[in-house]
Amino acid sequence: MQPHTGPHPAPRASLWTACPGCGTPQFEAHFAGASRVCAACGHSARLGARERLAALADPGSVRPLEVAPVPHDPLRFTDTRPYPSRLAAARRDTGLQEAVLCAEVTVQGRPAVLAVMDFAFLGGSLGCGAGERVTAAAEHALATATPLIVVSASGGARMQEGALALMQMAKTSQAMARLDEAGLLTVSVVTDPTYGGVAASYATLADVIVAEAGAHMGFAGPRVIAGTLGQTLPAGFQTAETLLAGGLVDDVAPRGALRPVLARLLGAASWARDGRPVPAAWRDARPELVRDPGQVPGAGGDPWSAVALARDPGRPTTADYAAVLLDDFRRLRGDRAGGDCPAVVAGLGTADGVPIMLIGHQKGHDTRELVAANFGMATPAGFRTAARLMRLAAKLGVPVVTLIDTPGAYAGVEAEAGGQAHAIAANLRLMARLPVPIVAVVTGEGGSGGALALGVADRVLALSNAVYSVISPEGCAAILWRDAAAAPQAAAALRLCAADLLRHGVVDAVIPEPGGGAHHDPVRTCRLVRTAVTATLRELITLRPGDLVAARHHRYRRFGTVAGGGTGSERSRA
Image (cartoon, rainbow, N blue to C red; front, side, top):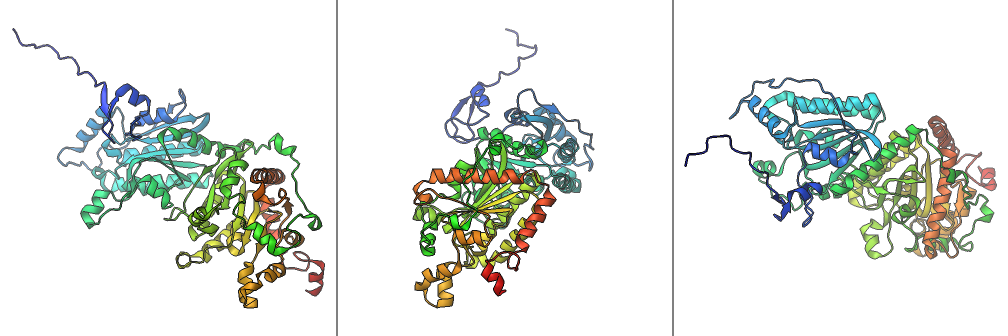
């Protein structure tokens, strides 16, 4: 028998593959159809740039972007192989010219520019070609006034291009800064892995950072840290979930949820550019608002009883309100400096199609929830998270609604070391000048500067059993009466009830609670707040930014003067 000398047939692609997470055999066609997410353990295997584009973009919407050529071997670099040889192999194996693929797309009908990295191309390394593509995508987004989404997967800067690769960090960061100045939304989708120069530039400079479940991100990789410093790495080191707990990313989403999450963000970015339409439902709303102090229902005229009602653990929390006020609330977290505060819940949602940035204090309904939320006492990280999201709201041109329910800012040693006073002061200044409508609602306990840090607004509303004061009655009694038992007397002297707040102009209107208080009918309470908030926003969203800021300045300028912010008898004594 003669040996076969003709061409051999191409090897048949395997019909099966193993899950990289658990090793379970996967039928390749089904695995690919599930975006390479294991049905057995949920592990998300790495996707190529084309697969990622197909998973995020609407079918038929991908329009690749043209990118200018760059030097292919600027240093004439050789290690065990010449750099051009490595490039050629990467291009042959992936079918890509570089580690980044850029395109105009739509995501659930919303336009975006997408820049997607492919780890299979030289470890997704950031060299001149990759940096040029990310920069060109940002410039195209700027030229077309379109949001930019970057999807990262990288081991770091490309060593074969030396300092020129390092300069791509500055180049891409500069491009992101221009989008920020232009008021265009940027979103970073962090996938596994994202390290080095990419993590230290455009991947962490976006307005919103969404990490895919199971992703890892950091500047130095685990092997570098363990190998060079000899440090033992903690469990969960650099995982998406740890980054979320540390306030370094806004959200963690499974692969299948990324597309709707992105669509929601893109929808919020488009509302202001569409002319800030006012929903018909808002024009017809008839909110139950009391503007006469003598008509405010409450705790039978007893301030100390009002304090007890305001603190009742059955009252709705911000998380409860978010589920009723907004149709599709998505929480955004973290101050991006290593802190995430459980006492502040914040995020984007819509009410009748209008995007709203909701930010509020979070308490709880039982001891476990109260402890987990630090009893509603925000840390500096909480106030800085609120400030970051208010700046995002201003950039997108969407209104801000804050819900106030806190005994006060956290007074612990770590909060003081973290700059609690600085964080509160920064919020007061920021809110004073924020060029979008702000509506604040005192839903329970409004305590001191911790409450005011979310309370500088165009309109301030209060539930009828809410209280708002410079200090708690117990604190006032301990300092001035030198007797904590005098708290009921202090509550009366502080004039902290809704009727007094309305009389002094601290609040603009009162929302009557259902009979017995908000804790007896929380769903109705939430609906009353929604109607009051949307009716108030109806008056504000058509105003020009300069007019909003000027009126807000006037509102706070008058407090403590003879002409405003006091009763007639107080004015005569001034």
